[in-house]
Image (cartoon, rainbow, N blue to C red; front, side, top):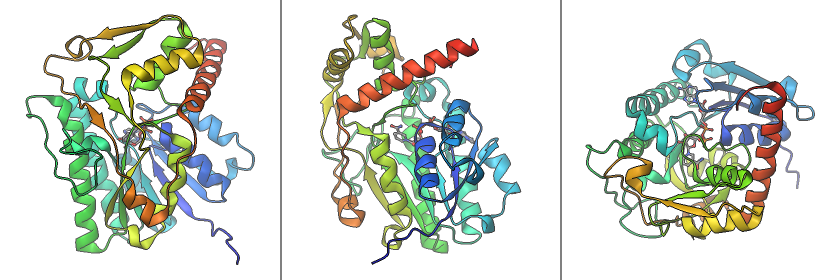
Length: 341
Ligand SMILES: NC(=O)c1ccc[n+]([C@@H]2O[C@H](COP(=O)([O-])OP(=O)(O)OC[C@H]3O[C@@H](n4cnc5c(N)ncnc54)[C@H](O)[C@@H]3O)[C@@H](O)[C@H]2O)c1
């Protein structure tokens, strides 16, 4: 039986970012045409260079620089077969320090994307987050679980709530207009090209280990997370958006094996020979008083396994090594160009 791929014309918002650049590579390499829209607020232009330099990709890869809400009105939905909406304000630090930007970006830009797609019922994947589970009423987390958020006095929860609004909006477009929208709740996604400056834990740890500095663990380090390699994650996204039975549904995407943040720090030091040890930093010092973190965040993957199959394969130690190698290369390039990342 032939399984030849029918090339698609794909639009990726946030395609210059961490997940978006890996997704771009995957789609270009299977023959699709990829247009990315990115304002490079947290994405890196260097990612575009890496994607473009892959064999045979450049002529099917278009980069439009700008915010989603300014660029999309100038594009026609007729020119695309499907959309991946990954652009968002991300990162714990960004969310706590810039709540207005976080809320406005996440809600407004998603609304613009959904309107664009609704014009011709374009299949669209909306990137959501495990943060939507809020304080987590049970573990492992299932897509239909109830959610409990902290008080609005703590801006930390605005990321979760803004992404929850995105989900409501996408599901409403599906119900009211038949929009083929699928929502993915990414759990901690890690790998090469992720940057630590917005508070992402693994690149922060790897950068510190490479420098021989202490790895700063927030809180008591007993909080656990499930880390999945980005190269495993992006493989499942086209299957979700291209499967009709997935439209109008929410899916957890991640890995099921938890590791505490303290254990993660030790694993990073052991894998990379980091000699700086670990420094415990109270949440109040790392963020602000009253910062609320979840003890466990672990996905139940039954739904995605049943719908399209999903078996992440890359071990965490491998991800750590690959991220370290990529950071070394990034630093060497930045040094050669005399500029910071
Ligand atoms: N990485 C994770 O572990 C994780 C976990 C949960 C959810 N997510 C979600 O996945 C998506 C991608 O995240 P990522 O980790 O690749 O982060 P990222 O910061 O690398 O990617 C986001 C991209 O969107 C761009 N962007 C932001 N606002 C924009 C705007 N208004 N217009 C155009 N471009 C804009 C940024 O420049 C960046 O390139 C986000 O929606 C995020 O909320 C990621």
